[in-house]
Image (tube, rainbow, N blue to C red):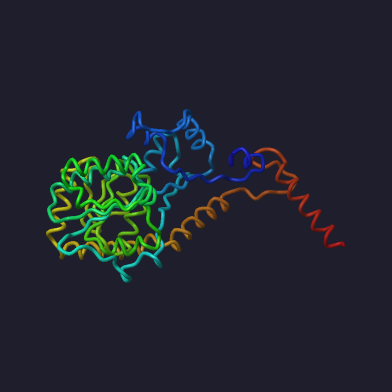
Length: 316
């Protein structure tokens, strides 16, 4: 729609994708619910958009495979609210005698919460809090919540799995700050906001080595990367960190510093604005009455009509 409207006026269009159909199809196969024609539409947009803002370096590789020019692509990451997510502030109380790992996100299979529950079976004296999905009162009717609860019962860890359902945004930082570790192990992830929120709260992150998590979580510095869809590798990484309080503290401190340095909204907004300004600076100035590169004299007509209206208003 933006391309169709902007092209006759010679206005550049900057596109950001929310995941790519080819990536969803690769990881979800028959479970992918994307509409028919999505891949063709995305290729069309990639070829016609003036510029593309990608959210991570891994996405750039995917875009280039689909025909994008690296010169027309800029990486601007997603950001985190550093006023809300910070190291100081209240912490949610938790049961004595248990360490805590927290997973936050939508309740869909590809988010990997089932893998975390499988890993929990190898972690004694550890509880898992899962926040996300419908409100708690509606969890009983949610298919994925039912699948996760059944898996926890099968593995005999149901008493240590707390499916919270969706929670208020203001309750997320206290929950994160109560955790020994945050876990984010999706099968694929265009960017991933939760690791940034955890890092900003000073909580080390165990993340799958996919997509944007390769950029945001620095393996061995702010957290640990594990293979996606590997509960055994995940359990080993979690156990290693839960046994080493000093290392968790170092990872948390480094994560908080990285979030403040790179992912605040002021920095993300400035990078986005710089991209737009760079695009406009490279465009040829529009001369009224001259045919624009985008085709037609539409922009000139609009500008002349606007000037005429202003002159008439001034005259009155």
